[in-house]
Length: 402
Image 1 (tube, rainbow, N blue to C red):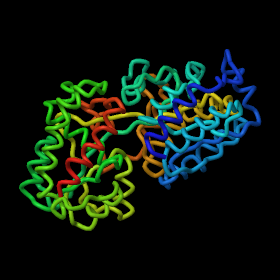
Image 2: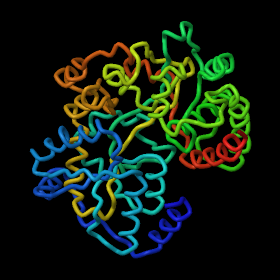
Image 3: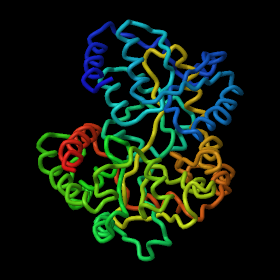
C-alpha cells in the first residue's frame, strides 16, 4: 500500500466510529486473570530466521507457562499489520485480529495519529521497573513520544564493520569513511534507500555534513529539510563515481551488501543489528577478518517496541506477553548471539545480582564490542517524517544522477 493510501486510511479510521478498549485494568493481577486461556497474535517481520526461532522456541513457551498461547504472524512489511488494524477500526471492530505488533518509527507514529494504539498500559507491567525511566531511546520512537503506547523490546545501534585484512588503518569518523571510499574506488557502497540500512546511512551522512547530530532539529519541517538535506545529497552524488560499480547500481538490502563484503568486493559494510555479526562470522557468512568500526562521533541508536492495538481481541494476553518479553530472563536469552543477539532495553544496574549474572554469563564476542562501547556518543533517531522525505530526495537526486 502506498504512503498516500495509508494516510487516507488513517484519516478514514480517525473519522470513523470510535472503538474503545474492551477491558480496562487497574492492576497486573487483573491482567493475568483476564489473560488466562487467551491466544495472542503477534504480527512481526517474518524475514529474520533467528527472530522467528526466538519467538517460537523461547518466548512462546514462556507465555504458555502463564496460560497464554503466543502465535507468531509473519509479515513482509510492518505497515501491513497497521493497515489491518486501521481497516478493522474503520469497520468498527472491537475484536481485532492483531494483538501485538513489533513496531517502531513511522508505523508507530502513523498509528498514534490514528489513535490506533492502547496507551498507558505499560505502567501496569511489573518488569518495566527494570528499565531506566529517563532513557531517551525508550521515551521517544523516531521523535514520537511513546506515552506508554508500546512496550520496549530491544535496542539497536547502527554500526560499520570492515575487513581487517584489507584495511590496516581504518577510519574513525564518518567523514573518514567517505574520504577512504574516494581514495579506494569501487571498494565501498551502501544499500539504496528506502532500504532500512541504506536509509539510516543517508541520515548519518546528513548529520555528519551538518556538523553533528545536535545541529539538526529532531522534528521535521520543510525549512529544516531545505537547510540540511541538500549538502548530504550532494555529498552522496559526488561520492557515487567512487562506489562499487561506480554507483550505477546499489545493493538492494543489508544482506546483499553482506554478500558483497563476504565475496571481497567491498571492504566496509554496515548494519543496524551488530550483535548478529558474531553468528554471521561463526557460520562463515562473513569472513574471520571482520571487525567492528566504531566512530568517534558515535552513531544513531534506537529501540524496537511491542505496540498494542486499541481494539486487540486478546489485550490482556498481549500485556502478559509484553511483560514476559521484558523479563531479565527473556532479555538475557535474546541477547545471546546464539539465540538472536539483540541488545537489552533493561538497565542492568537495576537488576539483582542473580539477574545481572544472566548477562555477565553471556558469551563474549571476539568481533562485537559491548553495547556500552558501541553506543558511546550515540544519538537518537530523527522524527520519522525525515525518513520518507530523505528517501524520496535520494531517489530523485542521487539515484537518478547515475
